Amino acid sequence: MKNIFKILSVMFAIGFTAVSCSDNEEEPVMSQTAYAIASRDANLSSLKAAIDKAGLATTLDGTGTFTIFAPSNAAFATFLQANGFATLNDVPVAALKEILLNHVLAARVTSSEITTGYVSTLAKGAASSTRNISMYLNKTTGVKINGTVNVTAADILATNGVIHKTDAVIGLPTIVTHALANPNFTSLVSALTRSDMPNFVEILSGTASSPFTVFAPTNAAFASLLTETGLANLGAVPQSLLENALKYHVVAGANVASTALTNNMVVTTFQTGTFTITTTGGAKITDANNRVSNIILTDVQCSNGIIHAIDKVLLP
Image 1 (spheres, rainbow, N blue to C red):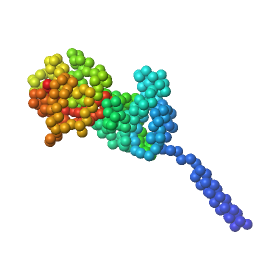
Image 2 (image 1 turned 120 degrees about the vertical axis):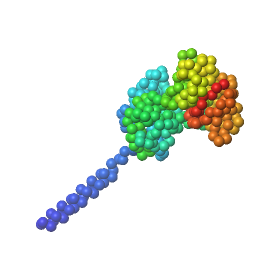
Image 3 (image 1 turned 90 degrees about the vertical axis):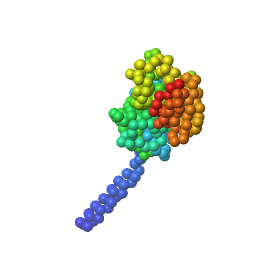
Image 4 (image 1 turned 90 degrees about the horizontal axis):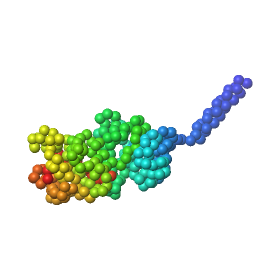
């Protein structure tokens, strides 16, 4: 009798185990793609709706490697109000698609891998149909995007990338956006916004004469100019000299990438004067006064133009 009970006990245990295993095998496995994770997050429901409307669900739910900066519902509400849209449905699909792609990098970058500098998003703007828009990431305190957007929660890992939540929608950056975002251009911004200057912010934020190519002097370049001229500060630069110098750094009506720069290329500027670019031994600009500036950073792509940084202020 004892043996029968033992046999029955063993059979019951085996049967229970088999049923349990069968039940576990039938449990659905939840997708862990970036799109699936965002779809399950109640605070990202606006992002999910935007992705669906823009036709990007298949891309962000599929194979690939992405970094997605994900705006919260509150961020989308602020974006809609600021741009005069009553609901997400009022945003044109083509515009919404590029805005969303401006939140996506084509590589998995965790917060520990982010460094201060420029990366390319998947978006394109009106200035170029072939060049992807640049994003400026600043790691000085937390992670700040294009000077205004903060990462609020990082490193939500997905099978096809990583998600970082943000407190705002990242708009397509203009020339002015990127000038303001990079702390190496604070002197340039101060010069452009001096009270006796034309409204350069409006000009370089708009599309009237765009696309623009801007050769942007760094803070060190402006400091060197003050030393060279013996002027105490930017405020001491004569109005006419500063206005003409600033216009001399801008080319209107062209998005000139570094790949289009050629040796002995003569460039006509927004100021109407010209300077010459040489590429032998590194890209350089020789201005109207035979002063030479090095191009030290290239191809910061904006929605309405492109920026190259230089180490000396050009003088017409």
